[in-house]
Image (cartoon, rainbow, N blue to C red):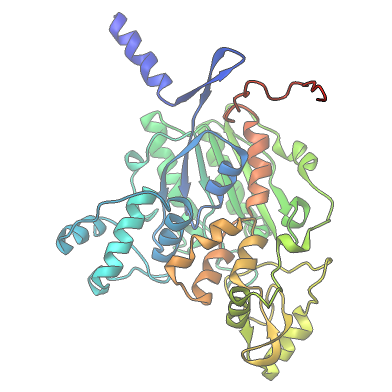
Length: 420
């Protein structure tokens, strides 16, 4: 009997991290996170920035570019042994479904051996368990927080308004795969304590509200209490991008009332230009990036300029960064005299990363992928502004999972010095 109690205690403590505080041992619990529809891992970046003691227990994604970008940003130093045998690599990868374009499955047999090795390595680094359509509840590791930023294409104003109705087969309808997984986790006695939904504002449009309410009622049937839907704009969280998204926090047992507290996290619209924009064209790297972002001077681009034109100065803000910044309504166009003559340029990918709240270091880690502007634009446009997630997670968890900083002996005390 004693051994059983001891083992139970051991299991409970294995997710706690010890540290010292004023001579006493303090144990900080570890937040276990599962990222469904993970993308490039904005949630990962936000938790790390907050100093949360966390681990990503697993992710779910099928888009090869996103998986490789996630691995580059968050697992740069991780080592993975890739089998020499191509058949062994394929045997592992074929247990999952992958996509080259995030729309339809791809045939892994048509990928080069180098591409297969890169995917194998990235998938292992991220602990990706595959497409949301393929995974089973028992595949999901023990999790405290499940974040699900399901596809917005059929909800957004740029889509065809197909919606997210259960059984519709739309990409936005993949939300109901999360229902399947949560039902299974309920049976296993492993429901996550916290849930966070993120999507576009039109999730609450008249055409979608019935489906959203059905979803929230389902969560309540499992024992979750849902906070009111929050519409949060990146402009209010230290980022000069007019990007509004919907967020819903759900918690087992009690409401967290995050919407009532979120106002305290908003900031004045004062932005440091140099934190987001790079117009030092004397720098050959920045010049090359600006050339890549430049558009040819055509009549259609003149129309784009009239709609999206911006001067680069201390008051510059941009529209929402989308997956394709060569559309009529893009985030911004700036005057630029570069490789294509005197015309306009879009934000560079470096700037797009910064405008989404990622760090310059995180952007630099992606350079080894050698992805095109279009590929990187699609990935960053589908992500979430890190600053907004930082504010939400800070209110959700407070100091519960925050790492304690050790006090260094001799620091923080006043010292007196004699003159000699």
